[in-house]
Image (cartoon, rainbow, N blue to C red; front, side, top):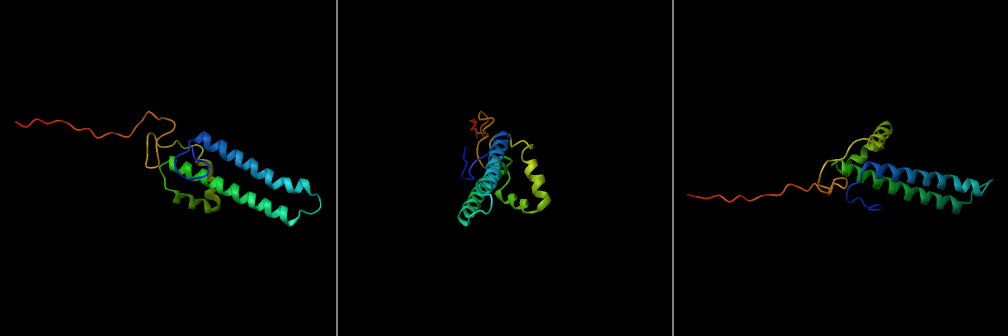
Length: 128
């Protein structure tokens, strides 16, 4: 599955574990400069931490987009997360709503790979 690109789908459990790991990494990036420098954090370390936050933000956004794809929703739905209260509801809801069963426009179902799109069958018709 993709981790750095928004192509494909992402199951609930994988989404939860990835976002949990990214949030833990974000807390580490936040706490580490304060633990290393008790009085004042140098500008270079603060800029490095800011860069780390931007990378983590990008990775969390990619996970949200992949999860929306699993629900057969466009990536544009992620713009709703700009609304303060709605973002908490959407972020929590993405962990509990089951994805589309079977393939959708964003790819095959990774939970049920045996379900394939319906094939077009050709029936022989006899003309009398």
